[in-house]
Image (cartoon, rainbow, N blue to C red; front, side, top):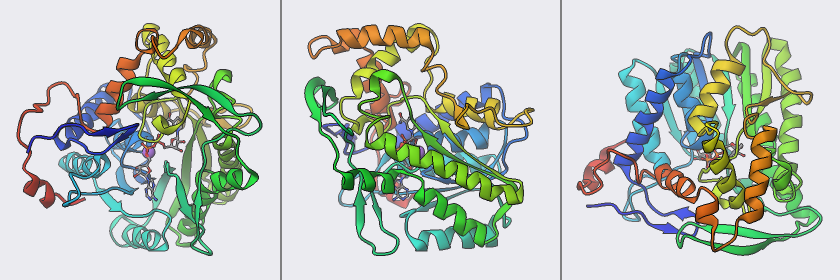
Length: 400
Ligand code: NAI
Ligand code: NA
């Protein structure tokens, strides 16, 4: 079969396996050529490993100098009568193949990271086949639902404001149009539920259970990813429901840091740059900011994708010759420093003021936004022959 992209709104309904493989190889080649990670982690568990920042972390730690063995947990779908499956499914497989070629362990668990069964399987594997200890745990899940571990009832996150509603334009990738929309205000219940889903609770429970199982090595680090962003986006993000959840995540980082001190370990939250991922295109009224940011950062030669962010994070902040990880006055790692540069933001503000439904593709970097989105799903990668037939049966033979 020949696979053509199917996009509905801001959701990709299929993926191109050959393109996903190419995207993995491109990221591997990038980190190999960069400043290497020195004294990096060797045994890493990544929760949310199949795309975005989690996948980039995995590639960076395996190929960017540390030569880490990795365990990746993700929630993805393989090929079936329903379709080709998700990009993350193929990312897991092609990452593992490349890592194994280098003699590295790359174990994939495809399942629900919130479930007790997944935790049990991961811990059994660490003990029986992974050498028994981890020296880094990365928490990079992005999801809209989480079951209450006690009742099993689902909490659902809401991406809403707190206080006043906000009206702003948002991109529809399917139709290449920009539409006005209003982001409504959250109820207290919605604020709480979003905090349960995207806050630090589940990160803490993973660290707790790994610690009880005694699989955290002396000096073990843990990291989670956050976003704060520029003042212009505060009403939608930082001061909205997602920002509230991130505040909870930051507090969890401090709590875990105290806990891990007993084994000489640390917990940190790294605040990252706004980027196009499966998760971020979902945030309403946020796309004009990304369009403007991409345009300005590319013009200034400061643009980074997930892989550039993660290689810089590990090589220059988390590992290396420093005696301590550099943090701000809230103990956060700021790898969003180039995004928040005053010169960048003053240009971004000017562009956002101009962006409208009839000019967004000219004023902002819509081309870059859309290409990133397509490439996340294995489409539009230079060098890939998209006319070549893909054999569905051989895809079905591939195992995580
Ligand atoms: P993503 O959508 O690319 O990756 C999410 C990962 O979580 C995938 O591997 C997915 O399979 C996994 N996942 C989701 N639900 C799961 C479940 N129930 N069980 C197991 N795995 C599950 O998202 P992205 O953007 O990389 O987000 C990761 C983190 O980075 C989030 O905390 C996000 O807030 C943060 N971040 C994202 C930014 C952005 O602009 N994209 C900016 C700064 C921080
Ligand atoms: Na991720």
